[in-house]
Image 1 (cartoon, rainbow, N blue to C red):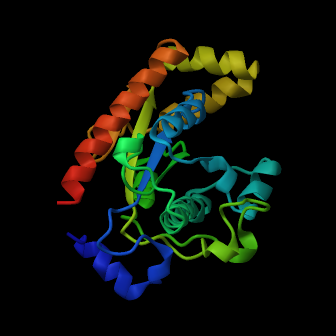
Image 2: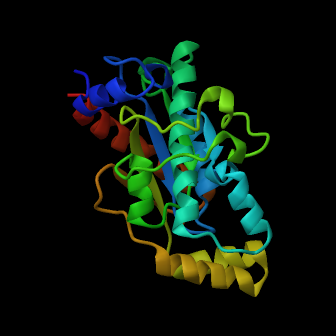
Length: 247
């Protein structure tokens, strides 16, 4: 059954930007959490297990954001709007490419049976997550502000146009205690600024557990144990959410 909201979007936006109506909806899995939670490592591991591509969301910051951060200027929520919109539009274009190229892995092949992508992004506030879900209107940056030299976020792929509601966004939250996160960031950064950054992020974090389409993983454990937890919890989430959303 075609998702009603997707049909409306097809009437308003370019059909070629997403998987054709009537086919299984593409999936964006956002692996999220504060600094030092391991979202990039876990995201890549989950992507490998599901046979999906992985992108570090930080690589999708518009050029204007990169310039600000390079000059030590903190980003505002207004700066994050086009970035989060670009994560979503880039995800949908990548899923469309998978569909066009016949690169979608079936469940029998160990895939999820539809186009999908995993992107690591802190997504600390519910408002950020709602942008990634497509529930908040946000426009990606113009073509002259796209990330430089990024293979996925290019003008040719029309990532400057918003994603349609056909893209289903799910989240895997990498959860750790403040003490564990502090130990990890101290070992990684070796500088007091790391601790200050973590403190700020934890103050900003709005726990996503309980929101729709969210699974979580306890990051306290060996890399192998955490990987197994993450993959298992993600597979459960995808199985439950896709069956429900496609009814």
